[in-house]
Image (tube, rainbow, N blue to C red; front, side, top):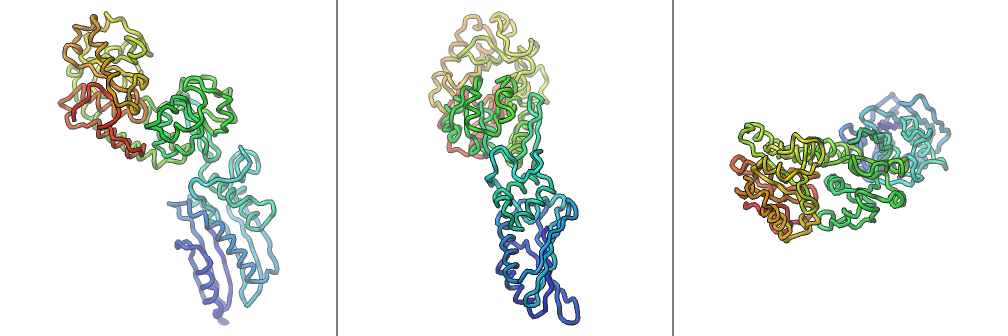
Length: 507
């Protein structure tokens, strides 16, 4: 809150009030109040500026307006004496006494109020930049990378006093924003704490799921570098695919990363082990997977918080959870005796008989969709199965997960690759008598939709393949189209372009 107090004769009140109206910013943030104080007609004029607690980030112009206002007051009256008194960290007073045309400015008070956060309406426009030295936190005087109330008060008063050593206006706005919202700490998927002491403006993304999440949060313009895999995603990631390449997802180049001077690098929990030792503390490594259905919403919430995009994160989470509840609520009522036994084959265009085992993302997705993974009780990881063992298990459904290199996904319109992969499996002599092959319940799904933030699309396909009667009303294509339009904001018609499943499901 900012208060200006004046004492003046009644005859000057109207003129001063008009000057205030013309000089102060619009928006209803200024409140003027005149009260008669003595028999001679001397009045008190109190102006207050409030930062609303529900919207602490006000217009960035208010700082400049307030500064101009104070200078105008000093020009309008002859200042006799000026002094600054600091009482404590919560209240700092500036008192100016002067006489001119019977107007006396007797107080200017700044008060930092919890939950209002911003002093002097030093509020900061979203996405504001500042000219502080690289790697430093503007307004931080003691080197702890935190802008305290005392430090912010000092910066404000130094600026208003006209000192030659004051922060630039943009730096002061940044300092106010940092004081109000930082530091921000999250716990990564590997259990490490990562703290941001100022807004994250430069990001390097190393894998598709992290890139998709950044785009969902509307932060793709902050990405300054990507992996070679992301650079190839011209359709789904049209902005990021143009950024400089820093190596592959599995083997990024630390020197290339440092050369781009990012604030953070986002990668998987178990990939690029040791990257921290090569680029920290200059660049923080954020490990969030966005692949596990049990942790997807937590990962999105954490990244949204770190990037100051909480509202977008919540919007996505509510959308995602809405469809997940429909699937869970129905599959939880299905007895195990009515659930199909499923063989999940991982990347048959690269390996044969490699599958998802216990506690894998594929296993959890299969369970959520109402299936029973035949490899569930095997050791953890992605084991390679004996074909004879698969025959003995006699799965009711087989799902093959293929990579975009097949080709498949958003950058492909020809289903020939998926058709060939499916035909290869159904023609394997050792699987000829398996129930899934005999009953033509063999399906191929693209990795583009199988994992990552759009995995609810593949889960809806799984659910329909496993229980077509129970999920007759579910439309995976509609869910995917909604995701693309609402969260990826790209013009892509999934009914006309892309290859995501085979055989294609009739709507």
